[in-house]
Length: 438
Image (tube, rainbow, N blue to C red; front, side, top):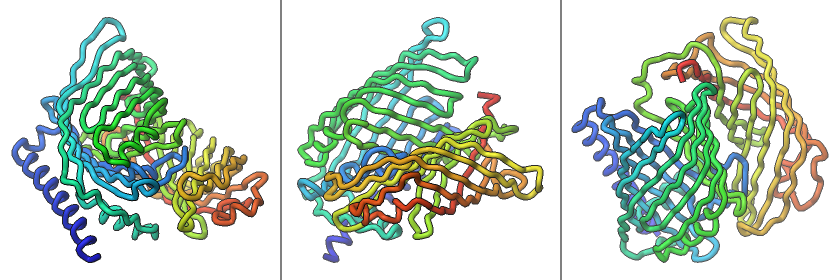
């Protein structure tokens, strides 16, 4: 058992060290001025915005490093853990490397044609992500995912990435509308067609259709064909420092999200003067210690707030708790120079979902919810200014009332989430965006 645990750990650390050495060598050769962006991100099926049923299976988590060179090339490296707890009871990892180059042609008026393409390489095999996954689980008091690693030798798959987008851009409303077709052929073929609206170069929403076909023979890859095929919804937030992305397939209930940071954004000239848009990310904790992720977008006092959490509660049970709210906030910043108190009233829906053995539904209900929150923004000046964004920390206390709370005995494994009154404490990163120069 010790050998089995030590070998994946050593594999993972070796790969991590190799990636860091390649990054350091690349930056020393090209110099920092050769890079326009250097993004470090992590992906996880737990980044769900409260939609679907996160089963922590299939495509479980990943780490991504990407850079955009001043000469135009985009280079992306991603290592991903795949688990199959239901069928084959095995796992494997992949490493992906792609190099793409953009192109753009003006077609007249607001229309343009843009895209990118280039070679890619996928290597599938055992790369030690079992140790990394369970190391992270240990911090969250989650059960380890112990599965035998597919012992076949690593296999390499050479492919090609290509995409093209017909874009309509109307800058008077700080937005652009585009239609895109993308294709990737490597160890799996992915074809995608989507229509996207992008606002202020910061937020975007895309609707489209994706077709996925695997060629590897790994059972968990064929699971992806079932889950990541069909119509999808995709949201993207592109801040100068923080970026998030989420892809969701309504028909299967599966999705995958990323959160990343551009490490070169601190070198950008600060231009923030006023707040035109506010996004917030954070954690709320119930009195029993259950953490809820927060994602929020707001403007002129109004906001859309999403709180969500998922995970195992007993060996055979998994739950998904989601809160979607429309809120309005009153600020009282003129009361003090050090703190900015605020009161927020909200109304929305709370979803409570319980399954057993990954996909057998036990309980599913959505009920109306009312909320009241008091919060304090710390400091008279931003904690940090990066390009056109200002960053603040906010401490909040919220009280939620679940109307017609369920009393069914079948929800006992998650009874703490079905009670009428819920008190939660939050630590929030508030990001104010100045869109005047966008």
